[in-house]
Length: 81
Image (cartoon, rainbow, N blue to C red; front, side, top):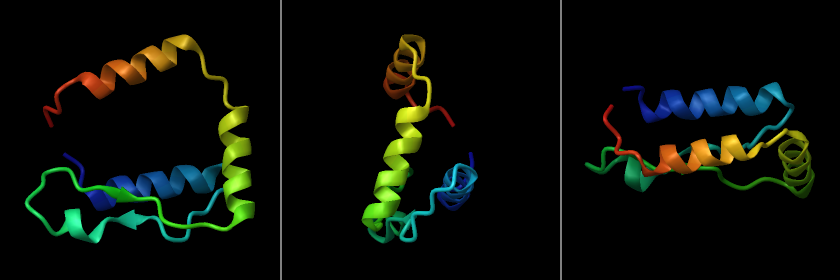
């Protein structure tokens, strides 16, 4: 299983790949320090320009119903890793 830090770095890289930088992106310090197996990712704060750019990027992506159905399915699956 990848660490929370690795997942956050992957997210940071993916966002940077589309020109979005979330300066406060990181592991939530409270859940990251607890015994909880899945720490929360803190997306943090960003300025209005970044929020607008992120919105534009997300809206430009082709989202088909099959993708929405897959996301719903994955969210219901138990985490086995």
